[in-house]
Length: 307
Image (cartoon, rainbow, N blue to C red; front, side, top):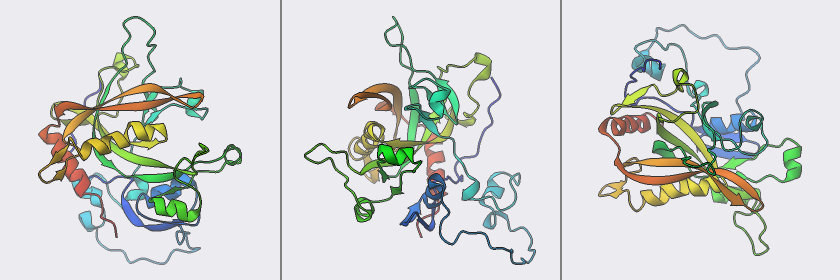
């Protein structure tokens, strides 16, 4: 196993930063994820085109963290104008459907940063257990994702994402199932930022453990990753976390989303005539350690506030 590097607590930005508004595919998107959304949809935010010639810029001395927020926390190792456009967090994914990942991994495989954590277990085999991933929620953001028709998918269209139900209805379409059991045009979705603990079980050679878990907190190895929850996965993850946060995790000062560890297992759920692998999330009785809580506090404090 490779050596683990200790990372300073907090003070890291994410690609879900609150950014200036960007007009994407005719939708005015403001707040968190505007630039990331533009990239997902494969379009350029209005006003972001490069000019034919760059204006001359006066050369000024390096100004430390005011010019580059990563310089101070990296001990000066990260220099220049690195920003949100360069920040690409690892993604946690469950393989479903017939996309590119399904050509390489089995349905239900759990991936982190495009690398395998484990394959779906054969639960029919005697003594087989479903592996468990431990995580702490850092941030959830509810959005609305467009449900494309088969024809739109065949044409190569990408689903639009908006930040409110009002925006979805204003653009056109429904957000609820109707009496004819017709699927709505828009469904809830959520980018979820998780602090994930290195799992003991990995379907990888012992000498090739997953390299992402380099953050040492409370005598455990962790990493920060984003999970995009949509459809049935939204119901089994983001919605479950939200409801626990406003009930079990409520404190005298408010909702303490990161108060306890959560467990996640990949399970197969029936959706119509199809089976879909989703994350089954469950709140545990284990309290989050002080170092992890301090890290999360600094992480959230480092995220720019909405304009």
